[in-house]
Image (cartoon, rainbow, N blue to C red; front, side, top):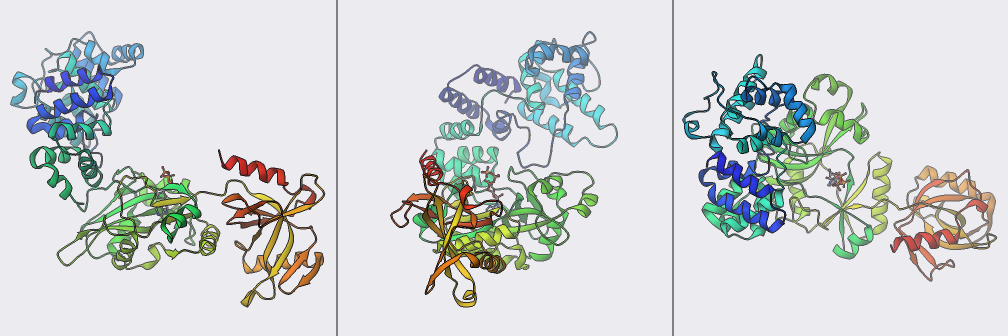
Length: 561
Ligand SMILES: Nc1ncnc2c1ncn2[C@@H]1O[C@H](COP(=O)(O)OP(=O)(O)OP(=O)(O)O)[C@@H](O)[C@H]1O
């Protein structure tokens, strides 16, 4: 395809507002692209290389201005280009306004035979690949020369889009959704098939060519390839109630506070991708070493890279960012902040006939496979499968105590849906606001906790401010030491005992988290807390400054909004 034809399509698309018309034009462009379809599918989105490719153009604005000014002749320099850009704000408009071409020099006719009668899309792609490959001493001037060679052969319309392409500012209004729809329209295949193929391959060129040359069945058959990133499955915010109501039982995991990492190991090499499918292998050598030492067959593993201190305890999210995309001083930084893998899913695993994709397998099976492919079990997330909300709350308390962010709730039966923020993975919504409630009763513990109070009856102040109304019981979130200390603290305030049950005068205030406030006849306040969790003893508060029923009512009303 002539680069001029591409530029004409780009101009038409840019001038079009309606989404459907844009899709129709992109479909027409794909139809006309012939053997350049893969490149065109990227260029139209303003991408020179596939998103996951390690190859980067690395052209700064100054380099582009210099190349443009050279192609524009003796009367224009890079400063002039910058001045014009300050007026229009669009490098495409500036490039398109210059009188380019006619400059002679070594590179002026570069780019191969194609260029004798105009640039082609593949010719431009080849030149840009050569430009990206230029490295070492003198590479900057080599890049300027190559880019000058291209601009020198451009019509003003071609220059408009070439300048935007190389600076990553295409902005003609074609997003991933439009490309997906255009592939479906141009080659008469279902949008859902295109979508799925894009999610597993992330290769627009490959998907477009497969749709055109082999149709729907071939799109459906497109699988994972070790080394090529898959879009990450995402989570929604949700509650324990949502999870248990919907799935009956939930797989509960720690929510690690780090950066998502997808591990590809083909038996020889390890490649690591970020959530945006950037190649981050070079920045995380200890993860590469870990996989080399603990995995023996080709796999694709999903997980979280977490920064850890010397004792292996997790460090805050900001710390992993210092390591994650680092290109320089990786070894020195590694001394300061180490990075650990917490693997939580397995998308491709060894099988009798080489390897198999696990996207359609239930989470519980995938996790079992994960455990079987990673030798060091400590790097694999612990999973609790339960239908008991108290067990989930206890798991969460342990995760929080361990310095983690919280918990994830997963549907044990759900497949892995790449790129989808569906309802099968829930990040547990943090407690909205805590309440400061007065302890007005308690129950003795059971088993090894028989000598301490184990469950605490909680009350809020009534509207008049002189009485207390019960609202719930808390038994979760306390360590053995905290239970013992709280029992001692409450002992002087015990009014009476009846079997397991203890009546306590209002004296001690607890800060309590919960998932939801519900209207309920169980307690005298008319409300109950769903999944109450001990947060702290409010030593700084007395019953007279504890929260009121009025506040409880207000919070309950806010939940409905
Ligand atoms: N056990 C786990 N299972 C799945 N994801 C986990 C787990 N532990 C930590 N995570 C991380 O949690 C992320 C989802 O949670 P969260 O929403 O807080 O992430 P985010 O990137 O800040 O936001 P969002 O995904 O909503 O854009 C995942 O992308 C993953 O990086």
